[in-house]
Amino acid sequence: MFLTEDEFIILSAIKIGLNNTEIKEKFGIELIKNDSRLNASFQKYGVSSINELLQIADLKKVEVLPKEKIPYYQYEGSELVHKIKICKNDAINLIKFFKNVSDNTKEYELIYRKNSNGFKIEIKN
Image 1 (cartoon, rainbow, N blue to C red):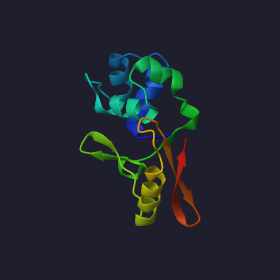
Image 2: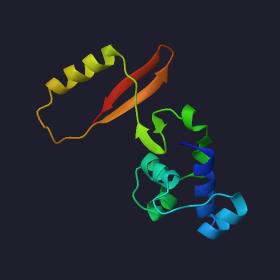
Image 3: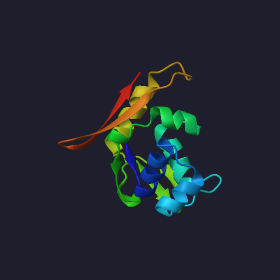
């Protein structure tokens, strides 16, 4: 998982039981209602509550990067958007795959892996 420094500090502080006042005093980070840094963490971990986030987030598996270096996620202002760059061949292969799928409600996972030739998209049922 990739987090910004603020996201990592906030998550670490909440995990050890600090409240908003203590986070502000210790780290100089003020949390506001609907804080974009906390919302970004929810989005990255695929959760909708702080309790879910605390259960699923493993700080040992976090890499802290500047916002502009976080792969797959980009910030447009303070809003986190999920962007994946694909080449024309990947798009063609996706179209071919989905032409043969009859169930329009079935969900698939797209896995974007870095390999020796760049990146590769895989589809997982």
